[in-house]
Image 1 (cartoon, rainbow, N blue to C red):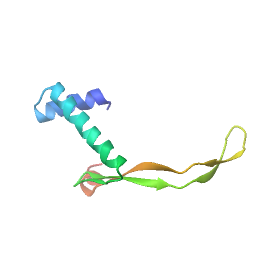
Image 2: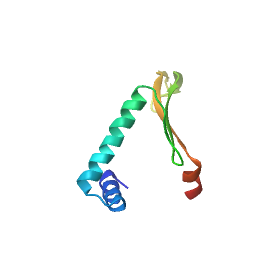
Image 3: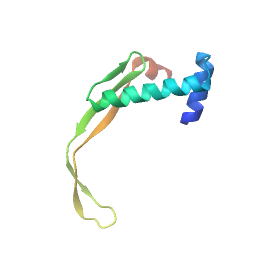
Amino acid sequence: MNKTELIAAIAEKADVTKIQARKNLEAFLDVTIDALGKGDKIFLAGFGTFSVIKRSARQGRNPQTKKVMTIPAKNIVKFKAGAELNATI
């Protein structure tokens, strides 16, 4: 499902227009990005938890040249599915 299909599904399920559904989805995404950027966790009961973890620097290998290289440390977003979501999948 892409973003357009998700907006259409939200509009139908919530009985709102696609424009309202798009605004709501974009607002959710903006708030989520802002919160994760600050290092906060987002917990949605029954759905899951979004959090940011720091991945430390590590050694890797370039598959073309076989040369060893250092992969720098970075922050990544982690999602852990909630019990209700796991039960439906």
